[in-house]
Image (cartoon, one colour):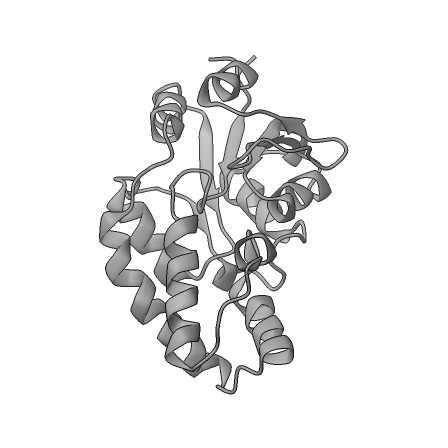
Length: 210
């Protein structure tokens, strides 16, 4: 059965932006003389900008105020966003749900600037579009607040909604919000207890009753 609402993570779930974020992060670190650690991608996947900054500051000696650092990172990211591609199958499913009248929102740990830029690039920017960025909540994922705000915006009970995310951080947030939560990782892996693990757009369609 198709759910009343579907709430989507953005980076890595709707759009294939994680490689761009990683490249921008590596370039920004290089610009201040810091070599990126080999496990950078897995350490920052799904994590908001401030905790990433704290990790880089505390473990790698990043010596810039947060505001200066994030400007530097976005100066590298935003030009690359012009090459952004959707995750195969995701936008098609979003549009099919939209045509069926299913309530939807994008729920991201990225800043508003990045959310809007990314969604414009893949054509998901229209009147009435509901989005929750890291700037819209006090606590980002893995806290439940971002998904609960999406439920409030869509005027649905969290129990009637599905959360779709590619990171353990995001799936943890969806589960904490009391939603049926689908884990669609970039590479096959086990998910947190309680999550529905899928590995393709076809599996996602089946889980959403399409």
